[in-house]
Every structure is written in C-alpha cells, then in structure tokens.
Image (cartoon, rainbow, N blue to C red; front, side, top):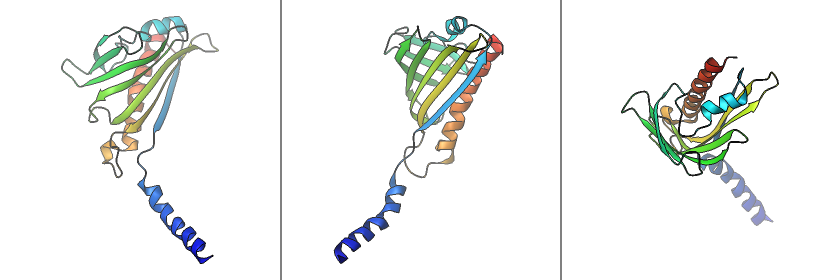
Length: 177
C-alpha cells in the first residue's frame, strides 16, 4: 500500500512540470463583415487566388497554378521590393465561394506566425448582400517557451487581426455596408 501511495504522490508532484513543459497553443481567429453587394460580385473580386489586389497591404501578387490545388502565390507587401509572403492553395470551391490556403514561407518579423492556414468564404446574407468570413489558425512566431514579446501569442493574434481587418474594411468600403 505505501508503494501505491508513493507512486500516486510522485505522479501528482510531476503534473505541474508537465503542464509547464508544453509548447504554444494553436490560435484561431475569425473576422467577418456584411456588405451590400451580391455574393457573385464579391466573389468576382476576391475569388481569384492569384489576385489579392483588393487588400490594401498588397503591392503585388505573383503566382502559378491559377485556382488549382497546390497553386502558389507570392505576395509582395507595401512597395516594390517589399517583404514577401509565400502561400499555397489547398482547397478551392467556386460553387461554395470558398478557398483555403496556408503560408509556406514568411519572415516572422513580417508576420509573427508559424504554421498558418486560412479560409476565405463568401455567403449570402439575410439582407440580400454578402457575408464575408476570413478565418485562420496559426501558432505564434516563437515556437518555444518564454517567447519574446514581438513573437508571443498576443503579437500573433494582433498581427493576423490587423491583416484581416484591413482586408475586410477595404471590401466593405468597396461594396458598401
């Protein structure tokens, strides 16, 4: 009996250490906006994986493969020669007005995330316009414990929120509320 009690006690003492030893938690974020335009009109602007000119932070998009699975694109931010983000398309459904992609290369100084994937969808809303939803899942830019402030969970969430908000705000301005 003392052996079992000691085994249980040892296990209970190890639990806090196990909890502290795990790495970062996958973050999830969803932002959406309703606009006055019909879904087909919105999809005509955002449905081409090779064209992200609708987003104000994107200077240019260069890609290969159109809207086929495994198509790639490189987004140049801000200005010619600016920082880049490389992405790959892994799901595309024009009938459902939805596509999913992931980042396969980005400097964490540009976007403080790792293992980022995202989904962009357009659906009709009750008012006759469109509901645009942008959701993503990602880890912070520093995968180990005790990340620096610029690469922690809060920094990753803030950066992705800013990207989504800027894009959705631009679409709302283009299509009306």
